[in-house]
Length: 191
Image (cartoon, rainbow, N blue to C red; front, side, top):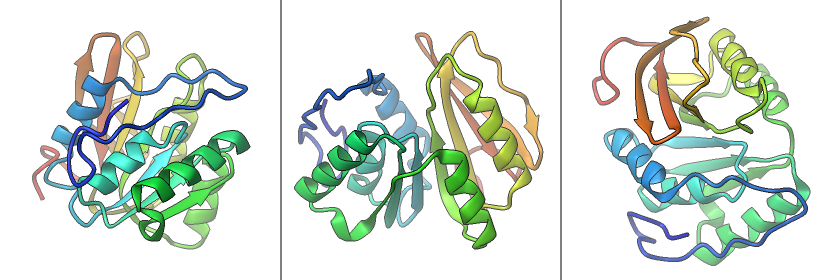
């Protein structure tokens, strides 16, 4: 797996297989994600929920995000993300949180934290995506103009409205969909 853009473009992420199987976001979907976010990524605070390999957050940093927060509850994966962040020289711009996504969101909400981009890619065949979208719709975690991007299986239909979040657009790549939500109306790049 390689970083597709920014400062670390072309650098390889060596995946170490752990005790649980992973489904890394395919390269074409990662590239599409950052094409969608191109006007928002520079200087952004980026949250990579269900970070897994850490590739999405590392790519965000490579492309100019000010800070990436990696949220992952698998201890093996947390150590791998820590190793990769060090190898890429992004330690100062990274925060690695070893806990469940929903607990992280509850804690962030209590602290009145705000983020520019929240990316979530939970296991495809669970109800986790709906649960987290519902949580995000009830919490005030987005900066003005911020977005939530949910990666999911094409057969899973996500709601057009989830609390304060409104679906802006779905982008389909094979059997993967990126659903982009915002508290504002308009296209992703419009502020």
